[in-house]
Amino acid sequence: MRLDLVLLHNPERAHPSDRSALHSAIRDAFATLEEEVAAGRVAGYGVATWAGLEEEAFTLGELFALAAEAAGGQHHHLVAVQMPVSLVMMTPIARALHGRGPLPAAADVGLRVMASAPAAPR
Image 1 (cartoon, helix red, strand yellow):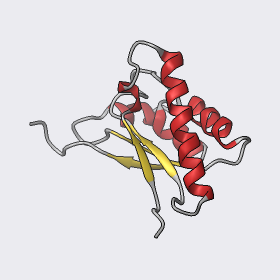
Image 2 (image 1 turned 90 degrees about the horizontal axis):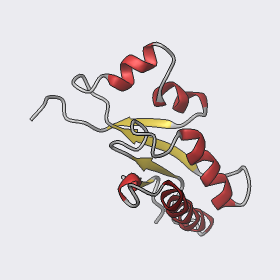
Image 3 (image 1 turned 30 degrees about the horizontal axis):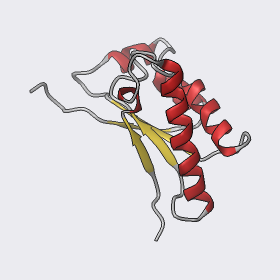
Image 4 (image 1 turned 60 degrees about the horizontal axis):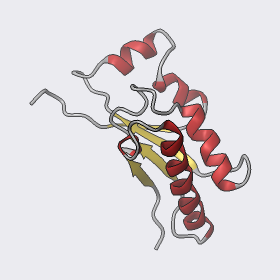
């Protein structure tokens, strides 16, 4: 059996006040996921984040650099990002309309983007 996609869930919560430790933890998780890809158990991986991109705990460019480092070169298997986007959480969409933010950045590097947010406030 092989998993199509494994998401690292809210990594920004691991070390909220230590950016260096956070990036190290993400790189270590990516290294483990790259090992799973090499073993044929995982096809690709991504990051599911609620606030990491918005609060700039990391950028997509930093995630790509950490994935490349974890893979030992440019060829890595970071393929997706999941973030809160909905009709009630319009910030990513509004920024994308002006060519800014994580949505156009993800498109520029070929990441799959998945939305995660309720359709209406609770």
